[in-house]
Amino acid sequence: MTLKELVVAYLQYPAILLYLGLAAVGVGVWVANPAPLVQTLASVAAAILLFPVVWYVLHRFVLHSQWMYKVSWLASTWKRIHYDHHQDPNHLEVLFGSPSNVVPTVAIATIPVGWLIGGIGGAAAAFATGLVTTCVNEFCHCIQHLSYKPKNKWLLAMKTRHMAHHFHDETGNFGITNFLWDRLFGTFYGKVSDRRKSPTVFNLGYTPEVAEVYPRVSELSGGVATGHPSTRIHS
Figure 1 (cartoon, one colour):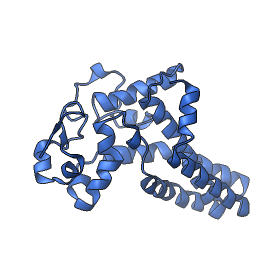
Figure 2 (tube, helix red, strand yellow):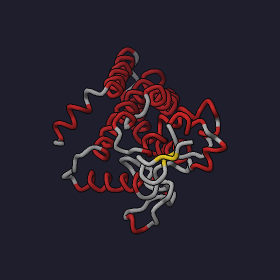
Figure 3 (cartoon, helix red, strand yellow):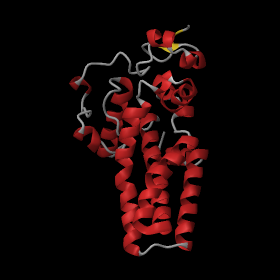
């Protein structure tokens, strides 16, 4: 796959078009209710700075949680937003997050801060920035999972770290484009030789033993992933 082919495919994905459309709406709200330049820039900067820490917290403590599958009405959500992605990291249908989860999360993370900084205009600027940042993040996520080898050293290192998260040890390298918070909280590893291979890298700890107690995800998935994601134990 070439970079051009990747960009063309990416810009045809409905969720990305939705995020860009909502970002345009945010810009429109700002035009109708503009905040002063300083407050606008501060709102944009706040959204950009918040994104990696919010992603880190959600990725580590929610998406990799051991509690969502225990709640019956959350089990299907957890399966869709992350369990399926780890079971088969190259399955494109679950590569992108669900808009029904992404849009409210971006709104909650950006709008209140933008409002405090610059009122309606600040909130609109922060929300639009959060959505654009999400699109950038998802594009880098595509680079990491699709059959494209980046020529840029930074992108290649980013892809290597994320692939290690998916195929070696899922308890580290929670960032996508930014690994600062992994470094600060001790979850970063630069080489797979730095850690032992995790036995739960494909099932996130949802083992056959766990499925006996909390069977909902297993029922929805046609079994529990063991080893390679194509290998399942059917309950």
